[in-house]
Image 1 (tube, rainbow, N blue to C red):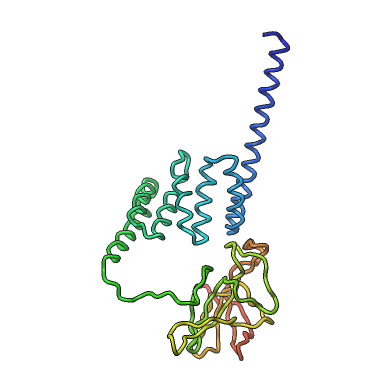
Image 2: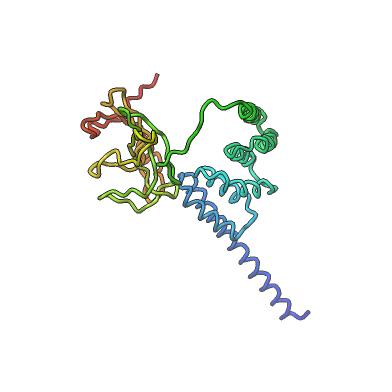
Length: 285
């Protein structure tokens, strides 16, 4: 091989190595960005970024397990399972992945499958793993007993998140991210951290004819701050309310030290309005 040919091969090898290093650097940058979004609870944003990582590195254990974690945190455990399965097959997977895999299987009702992964996690933390195994055994035992209550699906339920019901003078107040009921003003088009609409409080009551909950209405009017408040709890006389409030910007929960985080408040209820809103008086003992 002459000198010119040897120099050409060396240059080609150098350029190839440089391209590989650049690609690897890009993957690491995107992975760090996804992890930051995940740590801020912006799971809908993190999912998209982890997807970009996996397009370049399909066997990234970190991206695979975190993708599964995102689906799990978004209350979509069935979609999390195949990602946990792929992550669990990687040689450098973090032990916590096995624990979370078991939790997702538990949430889908597969307690036998969950115990398998809890045992794997037990090689790293036997006491914690045993607690979850005991929970699975208890669930399996209870599932064999005759049900005490009959669960029925209410017509007002939606595919969105409907949760945290509270009672108020014979009515039911609950939180929902449903979008089929629109406000006359203060409409929101952005998404929250779940990738769905902003959560709002609704109120409903049972129909005397059917006994089912009726189509709900907004608990508070458009002139008040009505988004991302809840769950709520009312006093027996309905004159006081305790509630959680959190704020999101562009779908991302803000960093705690910025003072914009989930907080607990109390207020007086006067003609449906919440007055004298104050932070919950928590005293350290």
